[in-house]
Length: 151
Image (cartoon, rainbow, N blue to C red; front, side):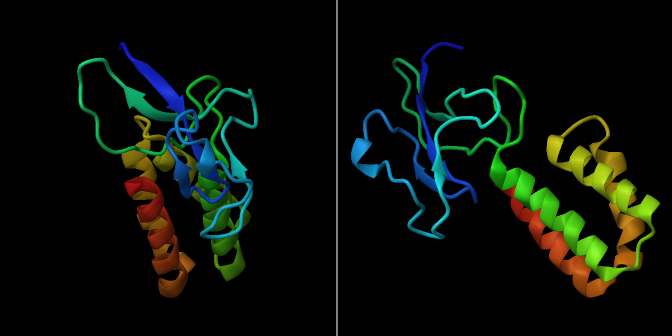
């Protein structure tokens, strides 16, 4: 793939500040105007810049898809890690799942957000655990996962 990536700036909650810090330095801020969270432009694990706008010579490109994982080391960015932690915490708060079921739910969520060959199995496992979690908690868990998976 030719071309080049510019550096993106996002907040820890995943709000895009700019997809091109190099050409929009006036948009570089320390805190998100939407939620007040601190911003980042590089991976916390390896220090590699977060991929922003992709410029391909001779190609008109529109839109930006926020990454969930670092392209260099594979670490998840904070917005994904927080969403996964929220699902686990909510499931634990219900008190309806055993320790083993909570572990199964955590593994299923990890497989679901990573789009692995186990994703379909993970979705089935979550559906089996849904009745035990309870309708209200399951509705919120579904909302979190749908948001993560569609962004």
